[in-house]
Length: 462
Image 1: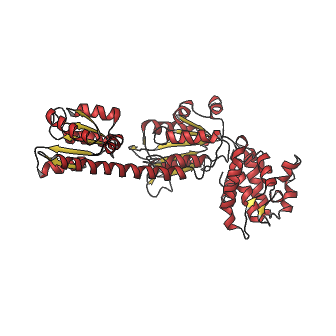
Image 2: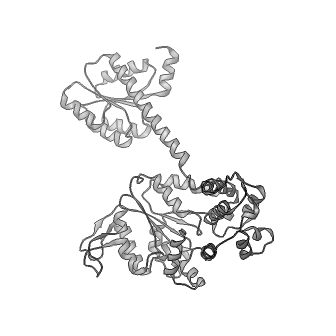
Image 3: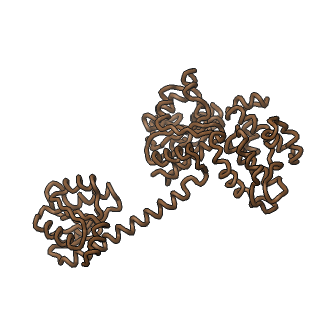
């Protein structure tokens, strides 16, 4: 091999030899070093495992029969650390049984002693090629994930980059996550991003709005029930903890869980098992909890409305989403995203948002955060007349031009229907109460059941 080729081989491949036969070790070290690889040797499986954990390697060659740990055991241990590890297994005891054992353990190839050095060099070359292919596949997967990581959570501001960083760092952990932020900031999107990037991505993601379920039904919704437990229990029903096992249960508006249910929720989280209503035995569940709240939970704890021990259990990893008014540099990106999202629904071609309208969007305070911005762009796209969105297409124009609020005038100017007005007013009241449905229902003069029916009718997600 030419000197520069050897240098190239050395920079791309580190090989670990494991054999209690010191002469065999030295032979392999000499042969592979001559080919330009970086080669180390150890003489038992335990030492090899310690080396691999500390520094890793690109390829391992191990004997089958060794003291302290057999080669097949070493293969299993190494593959447990790195599933893509490439391991050649050699032995003087060539047989079909040992070959099958080695391949089942995860060995890349099986070589019997005595072997020719050129044969070993060829196997090493093919093993390293396999390693490079695995790394390239993983690189492409990561690239695709990175490109689409937060396609529905848009932002370049420092605060949003911090949120993205926490999601990346914590997605694969088992710890519970608490997402805090005002209504409309995208808490469920962040929860879904955590699920998408975790090892639980193939498992279920089950969301529950705790405020949307009547108190009398919430317990059976979460924990399930057995047939005959109550009048309408005609068959067994699994609760959401069971349905979400192996995945993530997203508990939105966690502050709305009644105090009497908080103790049972705490017990399920601590014991990782759930007992359906009417059942005699508990069932193990493997469910990660991601919860969200738009209220100050610490204040609720101080008021005795939320259990302190449950708060600590939920608040292991904390993600705080900034309101849109604190990241105005993200508004052009978000507005452009929503423009492209809704443009296909328009009866005309829409090319852009003009500078005057964009300035108004950035000046506005956005009490409803990203959700309000989305509705604003959707309305402008569907009701506007021009090929670009202008200031006249924005119902918030009177609020940013002269500081006053003339919603009826804006509604008349934009040709709103009574249905549009009712939907808009309900949304604004909810925004003004920071998502507190009970308070919003009180202001609107309706009960919460009516409010939720209206939200479902208008397909409003809050």
